[in-house]
Amino acid sequence: MELLPSLRWSGKRWWLPLGDSTANSLATMWLDDQPSSGNHEFTQRIIQLFAHDPALLCYCVVQFSRSRDTNRTDSVTVEQLARWFQLRAMRLFAVADSHLAAPSVLPRHRESWSKLGEACTTMPREQWQQTWSQWLAVLRGKPPRRWQARWPELIWATKRTGLLPRPEIPRYANGSIPLLKLAEVVRDRTQLRHQFQTHLQAAKQSSLKQFAYGLTHEINNPLANIVSRSEQVLDQLAEINAQPQRQSLGRVVQQAMRAHELLSDVMFYAHPPQPQIDRVEVKAVIARVLDDFRQRYAEQQIEFLAVSGQAIDCRADGEMMHDALQALLRNAAEAIGVGGRVLVAWQRQGARVLIEVADSGPGLSAEAVEHAFDPFFSGREAGRGLGLGLCRVYRIARLHGGGTSLRSGVAGCTARFWITDS
Image (cartoon, rainbow, N blue to C red; front, top):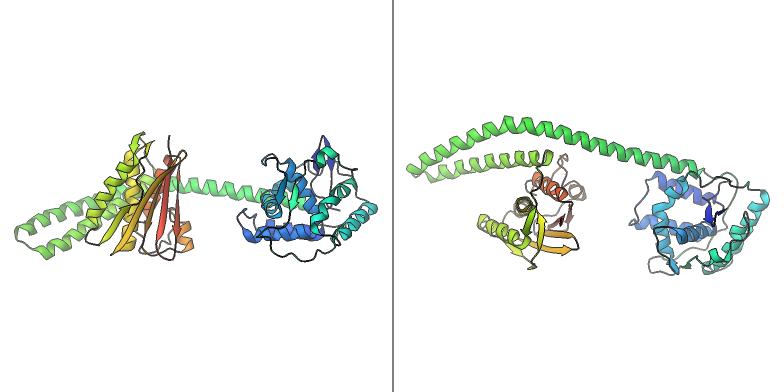
């Protein structure tokens, strides 16, 4: 018979039975990849397990009371307990010594647990906790009162728990899935996947660096030649007042400079310089960039507004912050096209300095949002600006111990960029 991992108190161990349906459900969840605590569907599945398996519920409450990363508490809701177990279940089962020295489970033990399970189906779930000392006493003896006094009261009635069906009689038979072995396999698989992603990212970074060196050399030279010759022709056209031709050639120069900026972003992402840390007035940097963009996009009738007046001083690389904000505003403006609004807000959150840029342009798909700051993602949607400029923003944020995020709505996006004040 498979047992739940041992419960420990004062150097002694206690064991509880693992129900067949519980073992099957946990195995299914682990093989579907261990969910995060924010996954409401999986939380509800755990609550359903609690509602049908008093032994599992007893195990979780007792284990919760001794968890090192939880504060001493007098009560816990069933939803809080489900989220806690959801994140730790595989780790608890994969502990190497959790089943060491487990006693043999005899038919009389299984019969005792089955009778307790049948009794629990006839009483309100709120009264199950009164039977837990009996559950633990089957294999080891009655648990000490000092230990029982530390167990928090379980609260079933919460707004998100929903209606629970009548509990079925749990089956504690011989032949459950060996969850200890399964937990070890799934844990090892998860670790291997994480290691693979780490090595893959490092290999991508190395390849991108080599690619960027060759690319900038091979393409920047022709671009410089195009810009130089175009500017010479522009001067000649100015002498004969050929305005339409000058406008067309001016667009050629703009696109050549755009290509140069793209190469610069790739090179910066692949091999960024170290930040030159100094005191930076965040409000002044934002004001300077906003003034520049108001002039640059005046013809497109795009408004650039600051919605926060908080003065913030921080230690950072001022030029890099300027570049990051430029990239965010350029991405927002090019997404809007003509006639729209870009809002910039900033605030301090403890050691963090956060800047938000919201625009009224088109929204993004979930896939595009997930990969917006990834230079290796090839499925970028049209109409959202340079793309690689966002990768530059991400790199600048990471160089400053910060990060980035992007949130899309029905219309418009909000990009967040934060650094740690060093």
